[in-house]
Amino acid sequence: MIRKIIPLLLLTLFAGAALAIDPWGEPEILPGSMTVMAQVSISGSPAVNNDVLAAFVNVNGTLQLRGKAFIQVFGGVSGCLIQIYTENNGEIITFKVWDESIQTVFNANQTLVSEVNSIVGSYPDNMYQIEAGQTTVTDPWLEPVILTSSMTVMAKIGISGVPATNEDLLAAFVTVDGIEQLRGKGNISVINGIAGCLLQIYTEVNGETIYFKVWDYSAQQIVNAFPTLNSEVNGIVGSWPNNLFHIYAGNVQTVATPAFLPLGGTYQTAQNVTLTCATSGAQIRYTLNGTDPTETSALYTNPIHLNLNSTTEIRAKAFKEYWIPSNIVSNTYIITGTVPAPSFNPPAGSYLNAIDVIISCALEETVIRYTLDETEPNENSMLFTAPIHINQDTMLKAKAYKTDWLPSNVVSAIYQISSANEDNLNAPLVTGIQNVYPNPFTGCTTIEIAIKEYPQNYLLKIYNIKGEQVRQFNGSAKGIITQNWDGTDNKGNKLAAGVYLLYFQVGSNHYTRKLILQ
Image 1 (cartoon, rainbow, N blue to C red):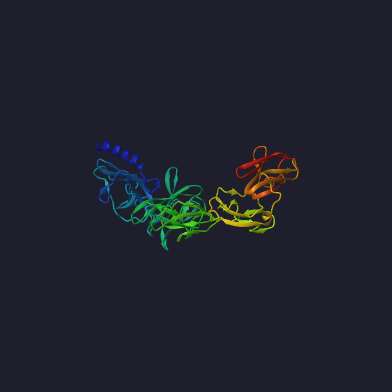
Image 2: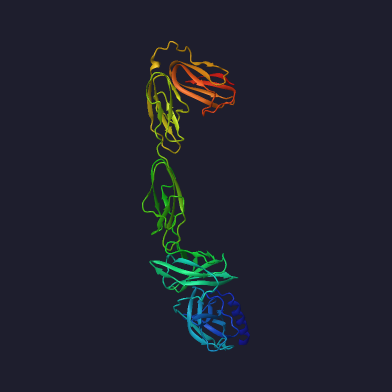
């Protein structure tokens, strides 16, 4: 019965060995070998399925993997049939066990002397006993594959948010045809509080995906790490101490994204922007020039002051030692202010004859509203588009507006016109359009309008045959007002020949006349 069971057990063990996941790679294949039927325990407990037994020989000071096999529990026995490659009798064979459940390598106390073609142990009553335990492992990996070229990485390593220690190791791997291949390993050293490692990684082609693992000496376990890196023959990645390549192993946390107060937007007053981060101990770095912040960018310590009439983009990123930095967050602030007060030309004062007043503002793209009846101008008051004709005593008030800006203060000017106080023997009998001459015209025509009673605001508009307003004049007056038109639009562009409509409005009354430009 035993002889019938053993072939089945051997088949199961060999099949399972192909599934093993361990830190050692493939063994050295030699022409000769020996076989060991072992029963394996770890710290006094039986090994379990998926654990791995490995055999080593020390060759010139370097441990050489000579065999490994998958451990199978069969009939309550944790057994392993391992083939150990050897060409010579008398080599000292040592053993290690990979505990798959906790991803840890354990040394075994037993050693064995090689004997070519021999068989040690038999199932189930005379199995070779291997007892692995809590023996401190300084390096779970064999030597890396040596290639003709390499690259260099200057790394900074953290494990679960804290710096690695002097006893820890950093290893680099590449998967080749589905098999993990060790390409480099190095000791981690803590210098000036920085856990760093200068690692040579062997590679002969560009573009290989390199991934990392860290041996946590204190926990006696291998910890996966990220990010990955693309190989570059003769490349150098990272520099000491301010541009190290960050490697994060274990349970790593990400720094919270900074928050802005106030949020970006348009403001009419100077702002002080406060940056905060919910991660305790994090530092916020920021830029104001449109570039992404790094660990060497300006350190946020006090609110960022933004002056009037400015546009600023603030980009921020939070950092904490051995944590993944936060995402970059950006807010743009448009700080406008108050529109400057308009000015009058000519200025307020006494004048002998009627004048045309121009209102202007030092800030571009403003809209100016005005009144001539001593009321305060608002956003619904008359829009300044052309010089205001004043031929009698008038108080002119103006206020400037611009989108997203606070409106200007109201400014006023009193104009006294001497000729307006003299008796006007030729005062008009009716209000309306008195005359247009010449009409038709080619160069310029004179428009006479009349306001019979007290001084009033008026509008004089000219439309083309499409109903589009092309020119506007306005003012406040009484009596006969003369206005010349040279056939141009409000921007001074010469208009095409054709028929135009003259529209004159005083209060609720309006009057029209046809004009012909030749």
